[in-house]
Length: 531
Image 1 (cartoon, rainbow, N blue to C red):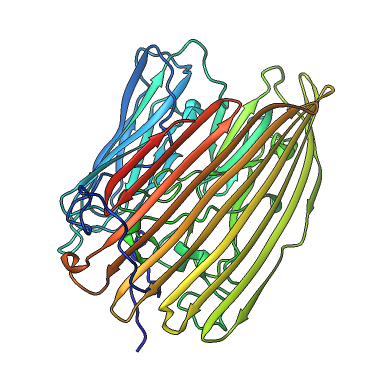
Image 2 (tube, rainbow, N blue to C red):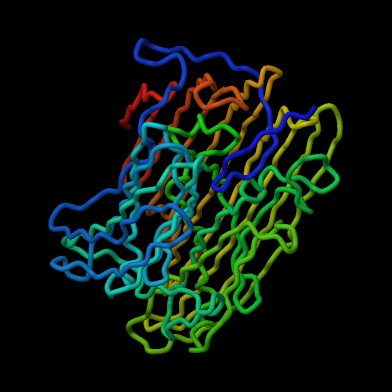
């Protein structure tokens, strides 16, 4: 008989997976032999936002208890006493929950602009508290006016799932000595699809908060297989996904979505009770430089801006893709004309090879490239912008009948190059992003489920001016986990053990951050920083 279990991801989506009993990790006297009814509050190794000294003002944006799918609605008013040109604006969410609850996905809109997307930790019976910080300075244009606020963390509370999500979100404004250089306008799409930019736009960037969610297989799209393979989650073309942006029907941007693992992911919540996977609490938007299209957008008419996700089966949902558009204006001209010079989209390449056997296997390769170029005649001369992006994905998915063993080894890369040529000066920014996932879940004959998993979020960026390096950064955020518990029994009979760690390293021309966390049975046993 096939062994089946439920993968808790945001709404409890089903995933059939498996595991053998794992050895209990080494422990010290203050670490329990197994998970109890309480554990350390959630913590991430990513550093808090750097905050300038001097005067600051704090505004509460939302304060609510989420029990269902009713949004919180309120009104935001700009701070009093810190001016309207800030050196930094920092969002902070403080949350608490206790009892039993799935992980949930949430958003915060101010004036229709999505400034924050997040997911929640799963609580202990005794209760947990957590916090998230985010630099939202780039939305300063939105914060200068009174705005409607909408926030939702969709939740279900009943006799089984008792956790009420109690959250408070604040914005802290730092006056500082020098205001930050921020976009002049932050726009949202009209009627969900059209955009009208100022006629003197000289830089245009779209950001898309792309998340696979909603209770279906797109929550773990990286594990889907073609229809001919015997697996519980199927997609016509397998697991390759790509988030595309089109302007008036023309392909304008491509990107690899980050393979977020929520805090119920891989059928094993004991991996995430203290340390979430990278980006789970602060979902970063994908940024697309649309400046080559500014010459088209600057005609004063509305234009269609559409987002789609390649690889999703026809007629199936499962992705959320809200869009903000950031615009920098040329204050020396009322109208900035220009032209789209070229748009070179390569063929979408890839293959999926299914090999049946005692251990089924699906090998996937996929990739795409796009280069677009355009110019603008600004008040400081003609400026040409060229944007190139190259995507690649390889993965090996292996599983047994009944999915009692289920493993994935996958790598995604997203290479971007943006070159701006202006009056004899050329500025080029190259960014290499690499996301990795290597894990196996196994369900043994004794109903002990073990998951061993490593996740990587890496990015290298270099900016040069006329060929000389001006700035650089290197990010490496690595999570590892190994957790085992008994399935199909009450919570107090799971006899769960687990060791998890995160190592966050960021180095560059702006300095260095390095922090390592380790937990055993929910106890934080190491928190070490330094460069």
